Amino acid sequence: MELENIIRKQENGIATLTINRPKVLNALNKKTILELSQALDSIQNDNNTKVVIITGSGSKAFVAGADISEFASFDTTQGAALAREGQALLFDKIANFSKPVIAAVNGYALGGGLELAMASHIRIVADNAIMGLPEVSLGVIPGYGGTQRLAQLVGKGKAMELIITAGKMDANTALQYGLANHVVAQEELLVFTEKIAGKIMRNSPQAVAVAIQAINANYNHAVNGFEEEIALFGSCFGTSDFKEGTSAFLEKRKPKF
Ligand code: DAK
Image 1 (cartoon, helix red, strand yellow):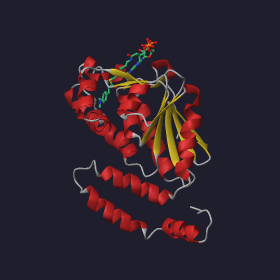
Image 2: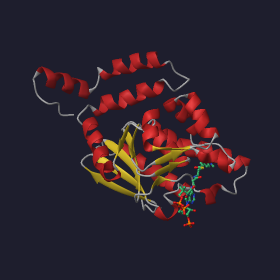
Image 3: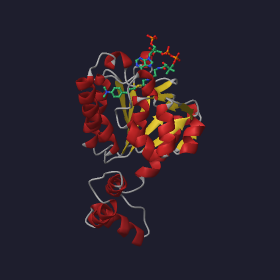
Image 4: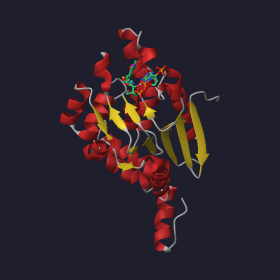
């Protein structure tokens, strides 16, 4: 696939997807969403990739939101259709991806950009980052899962205030709120993110995938999370990784997953 708006790098089990529209601060247009979605589909089937990192090009922005020039002329039908399409195509796909997705937030993460970071499993945030959901200042609300995921991550009261004031927060506030997992110096962002990826990669990919599914079950109203955990826990006993992990422990060696 010819990629116009993202750069895909593959190294040491990590696929790094860099959103590359620096002239518009990496704003997400439909084509970028599609390219990210297709890249994830191909990563899903690539046994050499264990972890995905999503970041933005340059040092100023992760993603400064959905591309305002693209959605400015939408009507109500187009708005709803695109929110549904975008959520399925990218944001829910990331949240439910079986390989861990880490957002390396290297600057502005606004609107759809923060929604992209929040759909990811972990957020590592550079100390220059500014994060927020300013949609109500444009006359819309977050449409890629932001009203749900922000409240899940920081609690209802803080989410309510941030969204209806169109507030923006710095990296340390994001850390304090639990929106950022870690805050690091801008120049260390990718190295630190790769270190976290390395820690994940020492573990069983099959168990990591199941852990993501079990944690997500708490946020899916259609299932009982505890029941889901029991079923998923049981399923681990049938995996090759379980055999390898327990054998390695008993044989006092490192597992080869
Ligand atoms: N879209 C398009 N262009 C953008 C952009 C965006 N979100 N953000 C920045 N740019 C462009 C600017 O227009 C400018 O272009 P030129 O004037 O050079 O041609 C260039 O990037 C550099 O930006 P600035 O000159 O403004 O840079 P500053 O350092 O002065 O300011 C800023 C940086 C991030 C504070 C500022 O650019 C800014 O406020 N940007 C907009 C932030 C924002 O409001 N983002 C959108 C949030 S709303 C939907 C689902 C979801 C959504 C929409 C639809 N559907 C399902 C339909 C989500 C909506 C949002 O994300």
